[in-house]
Length: 67
Image 1 (cartoon, rainbow, N blue to C red):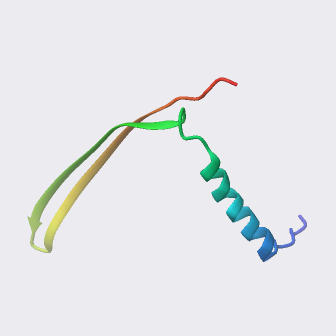
Image 2: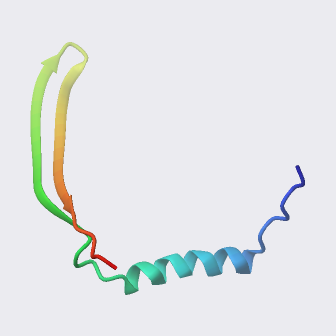
Image 3: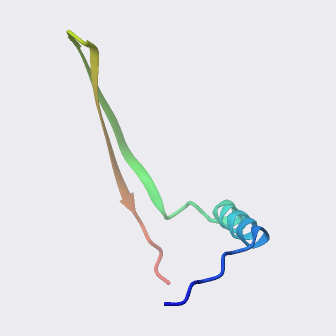
């Protein structure tokens, strides 16, 4: 398989800022919406020191517009 020539710095910067610009212009309405964000935390002393167990649950709904 032939090797692909590496991208130039200008090309890489253009792609980078293009992704950022696309994200800025995107309409967040109708995409993902966080419905419930729950954090449970439990701290327990052990001989090695304090141990913290943290469980984060995020429930979300994804709504896609019909095209």
